[in-house]
Length: 243
Image (tube, rainbow, N blue to C red):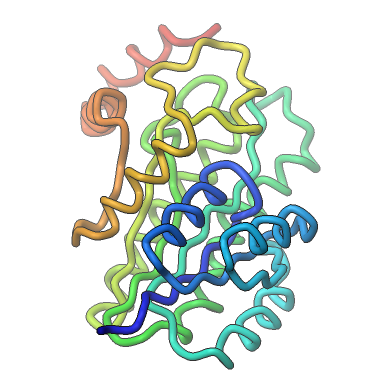
């Protein structure tokens, strides 16, 4: 019998990250889970039998300390970050300090995570970053969140080329998922999923070999089409979405 997968999930204290940890635990994976919220993290670790290692993706030293502890347990098969901040609204109305925090967690945090996690992976292991369909195109009300996720998409594409073939870089691009973050939205979210459903889609997607795991397709495919249209058409379409 082969050894169970060893997986590190960051952003696991709630939402999609917590449900993803539960899904992998249910199929027997050996899990290391990380987040800033130590109480919630430890409660989940006790529930599913995981190792809790607190870490903050916006703090390189925090990640380095976590990585050193994780390395002592052996190599990883997968390292996944879902850590994110979100605040909907117009670009000129967002608080600049909070905008900087969003970039620090979403984009720079993905950079820090990749640097900390890559040396921990076995040959052929998966390094998984989380983008968003919000990063496909500059949509109204997406403000700095959309821009940060567009950066994550570009970062994942770059890492995919740089780290191959030893490490497989993968990207998760969720649509709307009912979490504490999306509760802030004042608009009706199309094709919204529950975190449990999102987690199962991620597990199935990462079992395959494609670079990107995106869902639900009834939302992602139209946005992908919008992304490749000429600006003259695409910008006219997105302008109609302004509230």
